[in-house]
Amino acid sequence: NAGVMQNPRHLVRRRGQEARLRCSPMKGHSHVYWYRQLPEEGLKFMVYLQKENIIDESGMPKERFSAEFPKEGPSILRIQQVVRGDSAAYFCASSPPGHHYEQYFGPGTRLTVT
Amino acid sequence: GQQVMQIPQYQHVQEGEDFTTYCNSSTTLSNIQWYKQRPGGHPVFLIQLVKSGEVKKQKRLTFQFGEAKKNSSLHITATQTTDVGTYFCAGMNYGGATNKLIFGTGTLLAVQP
Image 1 (cartoon, each protein chain N blue to C red):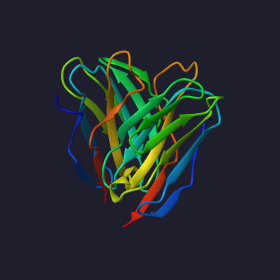
Image 2 (image 1 turned 120 degrees about the vertical axis):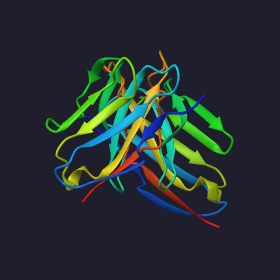
Image 3 (image 1 turned 90 degrees about the horizontal axis):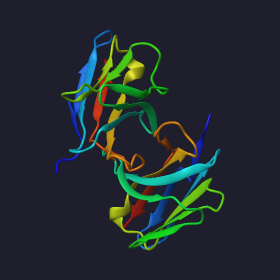
Image 4 (image 1 turned 30 degrees about the vertical axis):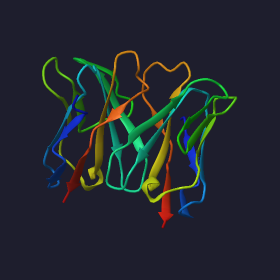
């Protein structure tokens, strides 16, 4: 059973470009969570999704950030017009039905904005 | 908003010494999870505590959930170099509407051989 998969593992973007981060949950998991980790800091919740639904986006910045989890395919975190402050590690986690507290993390995407 | 603080921020020990990190929430938690993150790695789920006063052990690791469900601790006996990493607690709000985890600030453990 493959774990949570994220790609790319490393992403470099110039200021103003778009960043698109992908996450495939573990098999059988229907809940996906995105977290951001700034250097030397803890993880901050961004958004919680189920298939085709955003359940909680209270941690998402109001502008430039969006997330989706379509019926088919991976979950996507999209950052438009990136700025240097967006440089961080973005982790995706998934949980099995009925065990939402047991979140399994992917390897993360390390975004660098130059 | 809710805050989850951990102390200490950093701990340096000699191999074989014990280590403890403490986690304190500003609000009552329904449960608490502990994760370990190696440098450059991703958080790895260690354990979940649910009941007030619960104590769980995993080999050299002992996890405890406070009676008021607002604090927790992780104790490592006789540390080894493989224990190096940052330990995060993560809580879920009691009566919360969604399943988001609020992560603590983390404790970075360094073990000198």
